[in-house]
Image (cartoon, rainbow, N blue to C red):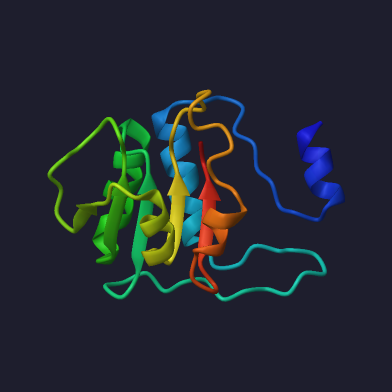
Amino acid sequence: MQQRRHAQRRCPCWRVEQRGPLLVDSSTSTRLLAEDIPLSRFRKHEMLELGPDITIGIVGLGTIGTRVYELLRPFGCQFLAWSPDTRKDLPQLSYTNDVGELFQRSNLVTLHCKLTPQNYGFVNGPLLHRMQPGSILVNAA
């Protein structure tokens, strides 16, 4: 049902039927690395060239967020994480206590947090407006 609504709006949408860290993190990383996604009549945007000039923001550094970091780290990107419950000492990774700062500083933001009553709707218009022009948001939550 939800996929049909997205299709009517001509917004690409993928659904992973079986869930688990291996499926979600691999799916997220693959989508980020895809060079060409056919978007019908939509203009194709250039993908980011992953490297040291790119900052990847990870919201939620649990099992899946950590695995996405591990899969993308070899590309030499910088990582910025916002994760209220988890802190890990990982190379190329720094933390922020302000999710708005993460959205503002990141070229790519990937969401890996469980939906709770406390965080429902926290990604909203004002937060999205803090993103850099041309940045990418991946909702893998």
